[in-house]
Image 1 (cartoon, rainbow, N blue to C red):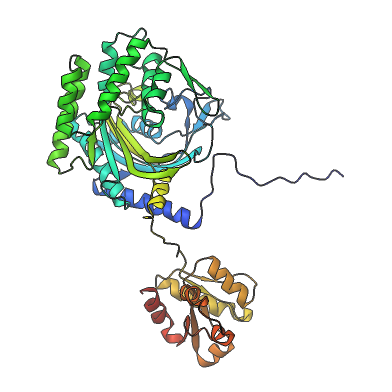
Image 2 (tube, rainbow, N blue to C red):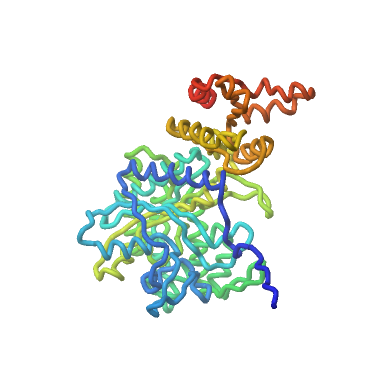
Length: 494
């Protein structure tokens, strides 16, 4: 008989498992961000993780890869479906399906996993947790200004302070106007030439001016040897675009008002460009009135956002503190972004539906908080483990755990078969705060021993006497059974 081959348990590259502290941290971040969205009056929505591939369509962030960056397969109905690349495509489909019944504007937030079929590497995953907020059906500047302010408030609510982050505001039409004035052959809004230029410029923060210059020209080979074909522009056109980007780098150091005046003075000869400046002025006035200064929201003309569906104002949330990397000291960089996308839902609905939204990458934000040492160490997910000292009395031990849960105390009755030492090791691995021990002596005296596992860890290194260690006088106490819940509450409150 042929021996069955043992299957090696391993994850696909680019995916990760989350449990314990890591998972709790993600949940806490999600809740702190969604709390802000709720305060602004947004309601929650949940859509499926799989959409029909033609619904996702051509609105993908990066088509440099042959499979367009999505995980797709053919279902039983011979239709192609894809794991969602972002949360916006599902929202667009939901709005188009339920358009008549939804309030206008429709304001929703959503969180969940999204999937990218991209080349994985150190720190580069193919599964991300995102939190989005969108306003559908509003064409005025208030919606865009609100996105910037809500973005700022959400980041601060996670514990990141002002001056450690900044919201960068720009307008897609600024670059559209500059590129339009160059009369580049084949360039039009949404054309492959236009998208190639935008995707190249969108990599400014990561690749610098030289990298963008290469991508605007013939192309660029990265450190791994992968080659990205360039936009193929003439050198004179590349020079003009780089001149604007250099000006933008300097402009973002100015106040919002001064930045817009500076841009108008240098490039304000194109109709599309001037329209962008007017929109940014209106947004800036609302932000000013609400009290958000340049320490929180700046205008940065170099923000592009590579997604083809952005049509107006765009936003990027950057963390501005320095961090050590393999390449040296670098800024942490972007944790999310968004913008106005007035044409996306029209593909599914047949009419133009003005929309704007933001998206935060929670996994990346979580990494930033750990780097800043601001992520709360809340490893205590379980408060109490009730040890089973007599297997014949399991029901009585379980009753104690049940009574504790009824009082709102997270508790577990040990369900394994180990002895006392094994049970204490288990409670320690679960990061439980307390272990409840009721043996023969305790049953006889109608008492319970409460062992504080946290204090036990702190004092164990200081104890040299075996008798003292066994007594556990610093980490445990004996209390009447009738006072057990009160005593536990008292310990947990400290």
